Picture 1 (cartoon, rainbow, N blue to C red):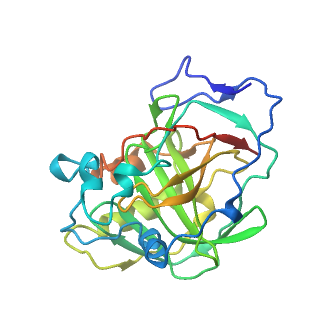
Picture 2: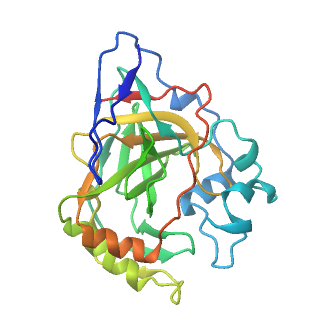
Length: 279
């Protein structure tokens, strides 16, 4: 039996957690047996479509998500069968262990790529262990509102932590932002994001940030096989969406949304894919 995500009495900025029981334990998507992506796709993922500000794609009008797949090289955005993001409405329990991130204090390069603000660690010391395989954090960025939905509801914002292992396989950790308490680490990012304005497209050096503070502690994860959420929409990406949101302040969110608001791809059909809950 699938677990349903309850949407009952949802406050404007909070969501309920899931509740029910399950005695079916399906096999986890095996990330180590997924075909690896091409070198070009790995580079795209590392930059997460780090295009110039004269990009051929965007989030509105003739360059919006409905037209991404019409551009040569971006066909997966239209014909892909395992696209992201999705609306998470029910899950299956899974016995695999949740990803274990070992993040720490890092100096970041902060870049406004015309679609979001990208934060790139200058070192390779931030890693996540997934099914015994080490994935290195390549960069992270945000979308407002969230790209993934929980029972049809968007959070105000979502952080994406883009990882790759030595074989070039990709994994992304998604973290929802919920305006309930101040988070000093995010304020530092917000301040550097303002400095990386549209008029300053070159990377700037941000103050050192404890990236570990940006991942909710002791969270379980919703896991499914998906894609990048921006062109070229490459598939074979393993998604881990934290079930616990990260508490941030309203002021911090206002700063982020003042730079980008509405840079979220609409949810895509789930089709026959399972979403599993791993703890």
